[in-house]
Length: 155
Ligand SMILES: Cc1cc2nc3c(=O)[nH]c(=O)nc-3n(C[C@H](O)[C@H](O)[C@H](O)COP(=O)(O)O)c2cc1C
Image 1: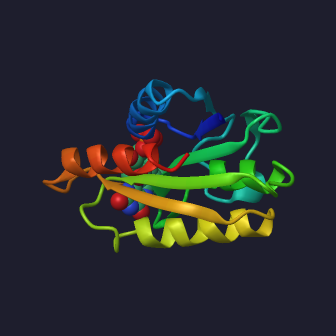
Image 2: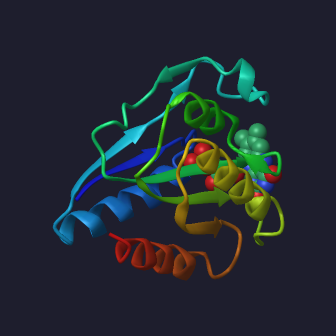
């Protein structure tokens, strides 16, 4: 299966989870590309004002994994802007994860994932799996290993 891992990551946390996922899925025999979304104004909180620089073309992928940080108890505005403009996601299998600094999903992660689900649904896709990495949770390492294992079995 051709899988695109599409990531927004400013300081590398989300990217490092994505790299683990890429290794896992590649070793399972998939064709995997890891692509980053970037913006000229990465700190902007209003997704409508985000000016995207790198906008990966997702047309050729059978499945997508979308990864992004939590920003202000919300899904990354950069990734929000990207998905909103990415066109139809109809027919693609999609999984989505977020990374966040705070220790528990109730501290922004759940809200961010809820927003990501709505965004994907608005583009015609249903999300088959979600995950949250809480970086200051003492189980962070296991959380990351479990997410990679779980997502690795999806395709
Ligand atoms: C502007 C801004 C807002 C943030 N808001 C939250 C938040 O609401 N909850 C949280 O747990 N972490 C928050 N964080 C921390 C990031 O979600 C966390 O460090 C994430 O892992 C960064 O991912 P990255 O290294 O891939 O950019 C925020 C970070 C920034 C820069």
